Length: 127
View 1 (cartoon, one colour):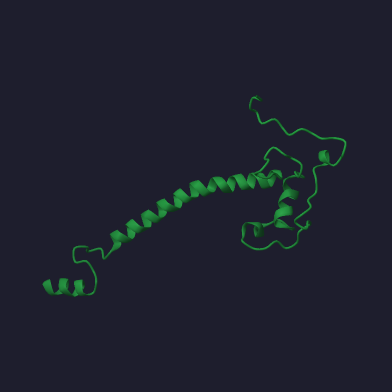
View 2: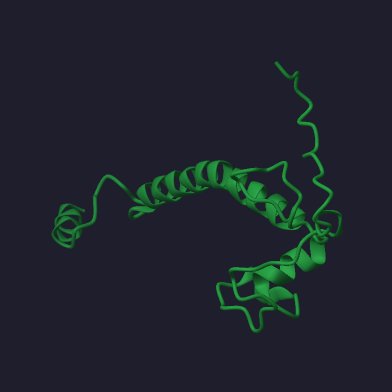
């Protein structure tokens, strides 16, 4: 038994761990799982916010401005190109875009130069 323990120690195995490092592998996997869940919580909020703004045609600088909201489908086509599909979930360039990246179609309510609609109320009290 002493010879087997000496051979295992020479091979780098821990003679007191009969599972052959399985415990430490389990600890590493548990740590990585917890780290992934923490990252999911923090980064998932950003992803939900970005998708919500993309559906509504909004920007983070002025989230109540609906000037460029032309409908969820057309808003996403401006970002991901045509046709929409699983390609928009993959890190691939869009196939075809309807815009040059500098000009975008306006919401029908904002196309008339005489009418300047007010942004939607934020729900808070105005002071």
